[in-house]
Image (cartoon, helix red, strand yellow):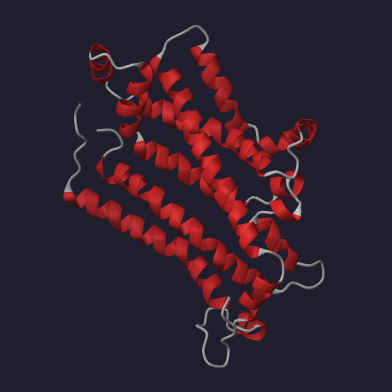
Length: 279
């Protein structure tokens, strides 16, 4: 297969654009973190100032750790996010490989059907989803959230991955078949490694909406033992009074795992941008 070549100037421009994007994207995170270490008065008086000896306060973190089970909420969010991403990438890659590799009657219609989820929001079917979860006994379980988020992310995953998989050389796959590789091994050993940047793209696109979602945790898993971090943080937001110290502290603590997952997936994403998606 041919290798996509980029001049040093293009690579430098791509890195510069990425750095500028990171600076712009991280500025709100920076503001949230510095304000989480201030007292309430300083948050509103000087929101962009760094905490000093007069404004520094840990009252927000103390409140978060005392009220509710923050670490349980954190664990639930991690389980739901990681499991959902795993199933999205697994089933999305398998479906995309089948659509890209095999020609059969209804191939185009099947692809369009799977892509409908991109245009039709899954929240439209909230009532039907809730009825199904009640009928199957999955209400107030993490599996309810994992299944919904997997279904929500699959249409975009199939749409992106199928386009990447069509670019993989047929000669490479046919050579694998001649060597006696099964279709499963061709998929796992030849195709998947070549579309890792696409997998990273799908993971990044789905990670943040799953982690920050409030709608489905509130509808499907509102019990104390199944609350996610976003839902658990709502205890500090009242109708008339909001504990901004606790809210900002909870958000600051919630940012760390998301940034870690983003760094893991973005390495492949950056490699695909600067070196070519498929080699």
